[in-house]
Length: 558
Image 1 (cartoon, one colour):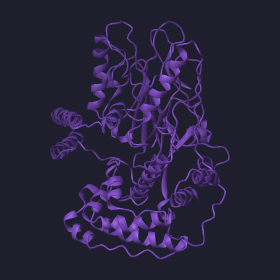
Image 2 (tube, one colour):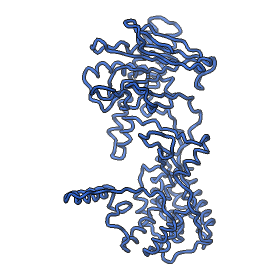
Image 3 (tube, one colour):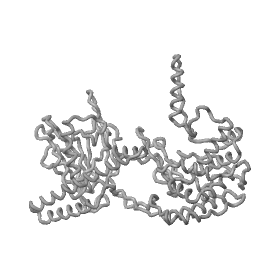
Image 4 (cartoon, helix red, strand yellow):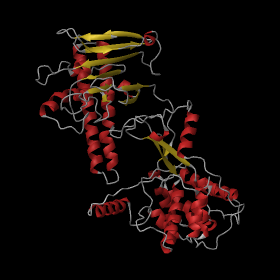
C-alpha cells in the first residue's frame, strides 16, 4: 500500500494497493505532484502496454476537498488534467456536482460554478468522463442526504480507446462509497466488416435491371429440400444483384459525425506548433502552441454543439430514443459468465439451450402439394404487408432493410409475388427464411449475471421473412375473426388494437371489482414455447383452412 499524507493532520487521504505479482512485471514510480491529496502512479514496462506503442501509463488518484466552504477545492483542475503524450487515468472523490455526471440532480449556483472549471479543463485537454450519467457512487449511511455522483473517472485521448468497461456492481466494502471497477484492454485490431449503404443504392442503374428480373418457376409438388433449394437460389441471385449496386462503408468506432474540414486544418497546425515547442522549448514557442491548442479544442467544442443542435432540430418521434441514448449514455453491457461454460462455443450452447430448448422433431410430409383451400396471393396483399414495414427495423443475416424491399416491390411487383406465392399455396415456411442473428443483452438490475435468466435475446430475421409472416398473419386474423375464435379482450397482433387497449381493459376490470370492495388479482404468463402439435390440433378444430395450419406447423418446426 502507498498513500499520500495531508500535511495538516498526517492522515492518508488517498491510497493505492498494488499486487506483488504486478510489481514483478512492471515498474511503478510514485509521484506526489507537490500537492496534498494527490497520488500519481507511473507504470512503465520495457514492452509496449495494452498492445499499443506506449511504454508508460499513469493513474492519478485525488481527494479534492472544499474545507473553506468557499467553492475553491484543494486540488485544482490544472493539476488533474495535464497535457500528456501517454495514457492517463484520473479518478477519485472530487466532491463536485455537475449535470454532466448527475443528470437528475437539482444543482445550486455554487455547485455549478465550482464544478464547471473542472469539466471545462477536462474538455479542453481532451479528457472524457467514464461515469455513466446519473449512476450513483455514494450512498450516505446516516442522515437525510441523497445519493450522489462524486467519485469520478476521466480518461485522456490516449487511454480512452483502451477503456472496455466502467461498472459499480462489486460487493459493498462497508463504506458509503461503492467500489468501482474500470476495465482496460488492448484495442481490437479486428477490422469491422464492410456494410452496405442502402440509402445510396444506385436505383437509376438498378431500376431497369430489377424490372427485367425473372424468378425461376417453383418446382411442382417438390420435396421440402427441393423447395428450400429453389428459395435459396432465387433469393441469393436477387440479393447479390442488390448488393452489387449498393456502395459499402467500413464503420469505425472512431467515426466523428461532427468533424469538419476546418478541424483538419486546426488539428494539423496545433500538432505542428506542439512539435516546434517541444523542439525549441522557448517561452514564445510554448505560448504559440498554447494558443493553437486553445483554438483547436474550442473549435471541437463548437462543432460538437452545432452538430448536436442540428440533430435535435431534425429529430422525429422515431429518433427521440436515439437522442436520449446520446444524452444519457449507454450502460456497459455485461458479458455472460456462466458456470461450466469456459469457451465461447460452450457459452453459445448454454445460451441457445436456454433461449431455444430442444423441441420434439417435426416431421414434414415427403412431398408438398398445393392446397385447394389456399386463395392465390395477390400484389395488393404484398403491398399492404410491405407498407407496414418499419424503416428503422434492423435487418437479418442478408442485411437487406425493409426500405429496399419497398423499392423492389415498387419497381417490379411480380418479384415478391413469384417468390412468396408458392410458399402460401404449399403452406410451407422454408428453412432459408428461418436463419437469424441473435443479440444477447443483459437485463438491468439483476443481482447476479451468472445465469442465463439474467439475459435476453433479440432475434433479427430476414426482412423478406417478416413480409411473408405479415401476409399469413393477416389471413389468420381474417379466418379467426370469421369463425369467432378471437377473445373479446385479444389485443396483440390485431389491427387497431395495442398494449394500450389491453392496459385500459385491465384497469377498467380492476376498478369495477374494487367499487363493491372486492379483491382483484392479475396473473401474467409469458409463453415463450408453444407445442406445435397442440396448436395445430386447436387450429384444425377451429376450422382454420388446412394451408394455414400447414404453414404454422412448418413455421414452428425445426
